[in-house]
Amino acid sequence: MGIESHPKKPHMYRVALKLNIAPELEDEPGGKDESERDWNSEVDELIAGARTVKRSQETVLTVHEDTLVSWRLLSGRRLTAEEVETLRQDEQKEEAYRSALLMLERKPRTTAELSLALKRKGYGADIVEACVERLRARKMLDDSAYAKRFTEQRAAGQRKGRMLIRQELLQRGIDRQDVERAIGELDGDVEQEAALALARKRWPSTKGNDRERKMKLMGMLLRRGFPSGIARTAVQQAMAESDEPEWDEAEEEGFREDYDMDN
Image (cartoon, one colour):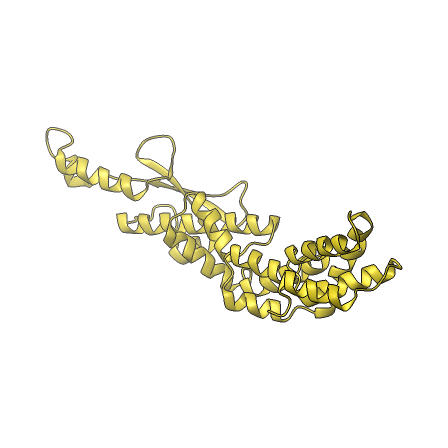
C-alpha cells in the first residue's frame, strides 16, 4: 500500500501491507465462512509480531533498503502469504543484526556471549545463527582476535597470570584451541613484570614474619594465575629490593613443597 523511509533507522524502510481476502470468499453468501476464518488465522500467524496500523487487515514491516530493491517492493505489488513470511524473517534478521551491532559498539563480546544476549531478547536460534554468520563474514565477530586482545589486556592492565586468564576465556565461551593460542602468544616479560608489580605493591603491607610474608605473597600471586616460577621470582625480587635477607635453601625447599612448584 505504501513505502516510507524509517525516521530513526538509516537504510531501513517501512512497508505497509494490506491483507486481502480472496474474492471468491467475499462473494459467498452468509458472510465469513469457516474456510475464510482459517485463511485469516494462517495469515495472522505468518505476520505474528508485526505492528498493526489503522485496521486489522493492514500491517507494517520494516525492511532494509537492499531487500526493498531486490524484491522490487513498489506500491500495488501483490505478495503471497509465503512471501510475507519471508519478509518477516528478513525483518527479524535485520533487527537482530542491528541489535548485535549496538551491543558490540558498547563492548567487545564473544560469539557465545552475543548469541546468549540475542536469545534473551527473544530472537530464535535460526535468526541468531544467521546474525552471527553475517558478523563473522564481515570480520566484526572474531573469537580468536578477542582472545588475544583479552589476554594482553588482562596481563598488562589487570596484572593477571596466564592460568587465571585461561579460565576467564573458557568461561566466556571461547574455543579451547583459540584460548591456548592466545595464551601461548602472551609475552613472558609482560607477565613477569605484572607479577613483580603486584609483589612490590603488596610486600610492604603484608603482615607476619619473613617466612609468613613470603608465603602470603606467593599464595596471592598463585591465586592471580601466575605460574609458580614467575611468582617465586617476583617475590624474591620484591624482597631483595626491600633490603631484606634472601631466601635460604631450606626456605626454598619449603616453598616447593607448599606450592608444588615443580608440577
